[in-house]
Image 1 (cartoon, helix red, strand yellow):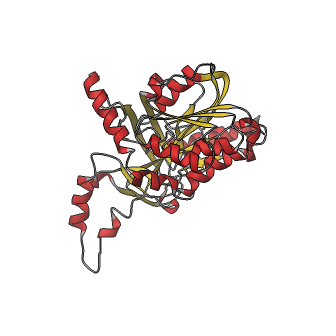
Image 2 (cartoon, helix red, strand yellow):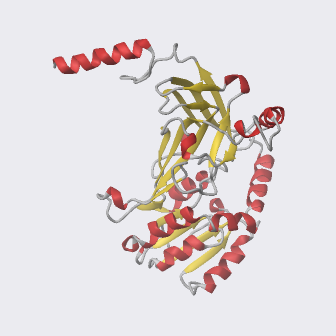
Image 3 (cartoon, helix red, strand yellow):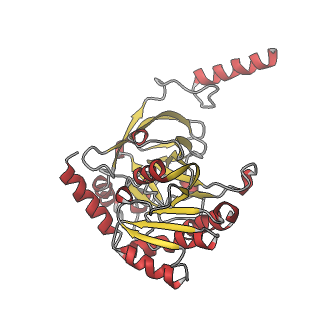
Length: 356
């Protein structure tokens, strides 16, 4: 990529975070705030007397959580002018001696003399469908350059889920609006929105499947190159009847815990339609009008989904959805769908189990 274009993209990206409205949206996102606060303050043993690096500190609230949890020192790095506001927030909470704010990109940051590596990295880097905005690249850079070999990342895993769904707000709502048929308007609206994923809140009842994992990221190991492309080729068996009108994408993140053996203690920040709504909502790829169809429980739906980093705008991803013929695709074994070959194969496998 041309370095001039990259500088322009990065400048626009960081400038956007000087808009306090964006931070108001994040700060009033209760599931987001609660997840980070719980993950940090319920695990004070992990933070006590530790050195923490906050990548993309924004208003500084995560740094304050770390100081409240007993961190010895927090280095808060913010590339935008918001760093100045973060200093005031930190002073307002009495942590100016614990938290030091640096106004620079993490790629230009240098640890103060006397500090070799940090114990913990915290960051809220997630974008729409997890990867949009490309900030995970910066967290990986920080991990590789500043984190101790056995250091911790908050969060430390991320998972992308995919499911077929109905989208009544963009399809059915216009069948009759105030007693007037507005199907033509709805059709044109969907055409206008078809060039990029739609960010909206999908009701849990509109999911046609509980969702399958497209990607699982171990943030302690993942590389920038690993993030360049993700592909999912799948035959999903519909779990509830409805109108197949789009593909819904969401993500979950998990955080380290003192009680790693107790799965119930793991904090999960979920953007699932079945969880409390967040500012990330869900990302939906709308189907073309002629591809939408009514589906019944146990019907197979086949598709190929690609998420590929945009070569011109490295903070963005291109999403490509290809619908496939379920009859021509290989189904998982055993498959619960209604196709004859799967019914026969499932019966055969069950008979083999009985015979054994």
